Length: 174
Image 1 (tube, helix red, strand yellow):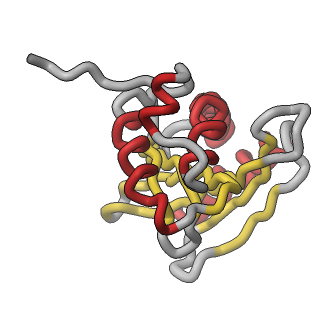
Image 2 (cartoon, helix red, strand yellow):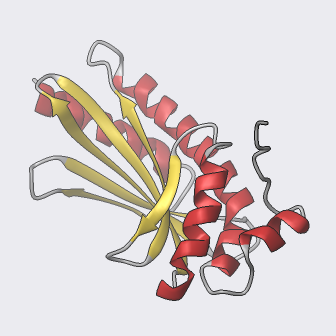
């Protein structure tokens, strides 16, 4: 039952994604879960984009969830990891959903969010909810990408980004 429901959910999501982006690839993971990869443009008038991945899996028996991950196209230079990690730590405090990090295997920046699913809900409704979450995540990417893509190359520090009002900083409690 769970497998059929997950398949229906991912198919419903793929249908919705095809109305907003041309590249969507549906696959099965090594552990027999489903994965859909989509390509989104960060800004409609520019070529830079992100890979959005949605995969189903169970954290416990009968507790289905999807992991949504957006991988930015900027390459992270290893020497810049500490500065980027600092910026991400500060900015994760303000993210409405998800958290950013570095995929050290790919040396790419990601934004990740996990959503628990309800098998009793209609797959189309849950697919629409996933699309809404992608939209919120993409709003975060549009804010973070310009600074993070410079920080990951050593062209900008977190403090410089704050001084230029590109990023914000947490106020320390006294």
